[in-house]
Length: 131
Image (cartoon, rainbow, N blue to C red; front, side, top):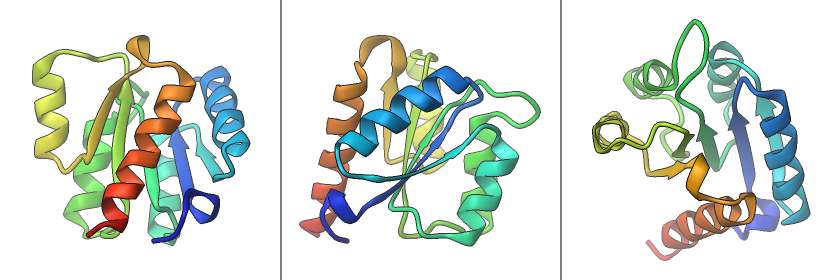
């Protein structure tokens, strides 16, 4: 793993406004950014590989983020990728479910600014670099 300037982040959210906002914030922080507006598009992107971090919304149509994470992990995809849930679901049971499915972090959208989201991703990458 390299510094965040060389890190690839995939942002998955069905809300175009949020996708654009987070994408801009990560680009300003020198990340390479890829976006997916559905679980299906995210699944295809992860199959191709190359992401260091995937920021994953839970509440999405057709296949929610929990199902997507379960599918990705179940198929052995993204083994070196860090998965961080970025959702409005903030109940302890949701956070626990995400962790059980293999999420490396959980951010509640309503309580974190875009800048704070970037900082969480940086910390996850730094902790990986120290291993």
